[in-house]
Amino acid sequence: MNQRVKIWDIVLIAALVGGCFLLSFLPKEQGATVTVSVDGAVISVIDLGRDTVVDLPDGGRVIVENRTVRVQNASCPDRLCEKMGKISACGEVILCVPNRISVQISGEGVDAIVG
Amino acid sequence: MKKNICLLFAVCLVLLTGCSSRKVEAQTWAYDTLCTATVWGGTDSAAVFTSAATEGQALLTPDGAKQYTSSQDGETIAISLDLFKILNQAGILYDLTAGAYDFTVAPLSDLWNVNAAVAPPKAESITERLALVEFDALTFTESSLTFRKAGMGIDIGSVGKGYGADYTVAALKNAGAEAGVISFGGNVTLFGTKDGEPFRIGIRDPRGNASDYLGVLTVTDTSVVTSGAYERYFEYAETVYHHLLDANTGYPRESDLLSVTVICSDGAQADMMSTALWLMGMEDGWKLYETLGKTEGFLPAEVIFVSQDGTVRVSDGIAPHFALTSDDYTLWKD
Image 1 (cartoon, rainbow over the protein chains, first blue to last red):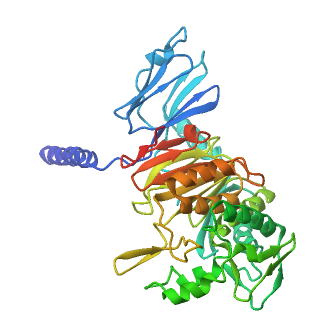
Image 2 (tube, rainbow over the protein chains, first blue to last red):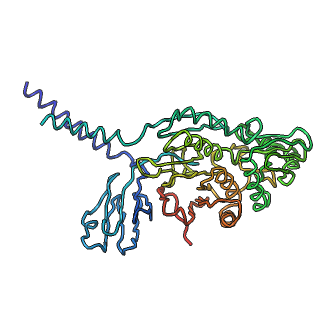
C-alpha cells in the first residue's frame, strides 16, 4: 500500500511540474504598464514590456528592463527606493517618500477598448 | 491557531470585496451599434442607462434615426439646443476641411450604405447625390433647421455615438452613480475612478483583431473616441471601400492615417473631430488639430494619430498618460 501512495505522489508531482512548464509557454498578456508619479501627478506611463529610462526631476532615473522596474541614482538621503531593487508584478510599488515619487506596476488588461 | 487563520481569511475577504460600491453591467442597442456600460453605484443604473441611450438619440434627429432626409424644398424642422451646438461645430469643420467633412453627407452615405453594400454605386448616382450635399445650403437657429432642397439631409454618424455616451453619463450621475465606463460601439466615455485609480483604456490596433490594442491610455472624466477606416468597409474588385466619405468627391477618402483618437470632455466634439482629422491625413490633420485648439467654440482636446507607416503621434497634454504597448508601432519624433 505504501508503494502505491508513493507512485501516485510521483505522478502528481510530475503533473504539476509538467503543467507549470506548459504554462510558462503561454504568451504573456500585453498591456501591463508602469506609472511614474511625482507629488501625486502622473509624469509618465510606460509599457512594462518596453525597455525604457525615465528621468526624474530629482536627477534619479526609473529603469524598465526585461519586464522589471528599478530606481537608480536617487537623490533622497535614505535611498530606500533604490535599495528596494527590482519590481515586476502587478500592484508592486516603489516609493520614495522624501521626494514623493511613486513607481507602480498596473494590472494587465484594460477596462475598455476604443476604436 | 485555527481561529487566527479563520480571522485572517475573513479579513482578506472583506478587503477584497468591501472597498468599492456595487458594480452594475448593462447593454442596449442605439445609434446602430451595441452600447455597453459598467457602472459603480447609483439607483437603478442599468435601467437609467438603457432609457438614456434611446432618449439621447431622439434629441439629434426628429425620429431618432441615424439620418434625417427632407421631403420638400425649404422644409424646416424643430431641433434641440444640443444639435444646434453640434451644427455650429460642424460648420467650422466644414470650412476648415474645405468641404471634405460635411454634416449633410446623408444622401451619399445612404447611397453607399457601406455596412450592407457588396458593390460601389454607379458614378452617375454619385454625381446626382453630390448635388444634394452642401452644408452651406442649411440655415439654422437655436431651435430650427431649414433644408434648401428636398432630398437634402443630415447624418449623425460622425457625432451620435460620442454624444450618446455623454448623454447617458449625465443621466447616470444624476441618479447618483459614482463611476463608470460607457462604450457606444467603441466610443468610450469615463467618469469617476475605480478603487481610486483612473481607468485603463486600450487604443485599438487597427491592423489587429477587435481585442488587440496598440497602447494604453490612463484617464478618467473624459470621452475617448477613435475614427478609422478599418472596421466599416467592403471589398469589390480588389478595392476596399470604407465608410469615411469625402463629401467633395462622393467617394471614400484616401488617408495616410490608420486611426485618429480624440480625448475631450465633450463626446460629440471628440466624435466629430476624430472623423474630420482622419479625413485630412497625418500632416494636414495635425495642422487642423492645432488650429482647432485656437478656435472659439471648440473645447480643449488631446489626440493620438496612428499613421499607415506605423508611426504614433501623441499630443503633449496626453503623452504622459499614454503607453505604447505594441512593438509593431513606434512613437513619432520631432
